[in-house]
Structures are given as C-alpha cells and as structure tokens.
Image 1 (cartoon, helix red, strand yellow):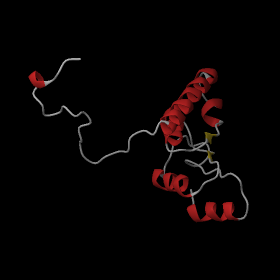
Image 2 (tube, helix red, strand yellow; image 1 turned 90 degrees about the vertical axis):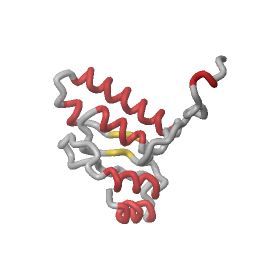
Image 3 (cartoon, helix red, strand yellow; image 1 turned 30 degrees about the vertical axis):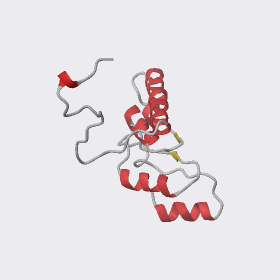
Image 4 (cartoon, one colour; image 1 turned 45 degrees about the horizontal axis):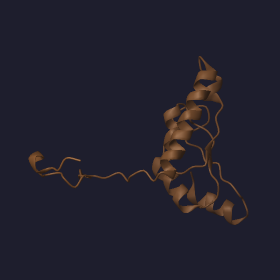
Length: 128
C-alpha cells in the first residue's frame, strides 16, 4: 500500500503490483482503504490484492475500487466448506468488477434527489 514504493517499482520496470489489503492470513479486509484507493488511482499497471482478504465482501470492495484481481488462500483453505466459499468469492469478485466497469455512482456527503419529479405533488405527475 506504499504509494512511493509502488511507483518506484513501476518506474524500474515492474509490470504489475501486488499490494496487500491486510497482513497475510489475518482476513481483516482492506485496513487502509484510503491508501489502496490512492494507489489504484495513481498507478496504471495491473494490480492484484495479495493478502488479508477474509470474506467475499472484502474481495468485492477492492474490485469495486478498480483492482484487477484478488489472490486468495487462507480464506478458502480454512473455510468449513471451501468449495462453497470459493464460489462465493468468484461471484463477489465478478460483482465488484462489474460495479467498477459500470461506473457506480460516487459517494456523497448529503442527500440529493435523482428523479426530476421530486417535490412535485403526485397529482401533477403524468402517467405513462
């Protein structure tokens, strides 16, 4: 997750970077989301998250941020049902990638209506 180090690695010829989400085997998910998102925004090489992913939702989240893949071991190897969990991870990774490619809306600090009829009395709405 070190932006300066990753940038230097790319500058000397690394064609991919594999930052961790959390220390290997912890299953904590992204412990420094700001750093990972900044890394993804600033460095234009393939990036694979390589450690610390414990749940399918963790994998989905990093894929939503634009990472290119997730390397898993402990989460699946230590699961009660590794086949079921591997399937859940595959679906979460696909969903996260599709959300990224689909251009999910940016998070906002305040509410903002997305329909043009908000504030218009229902009796003024035209039926389709």
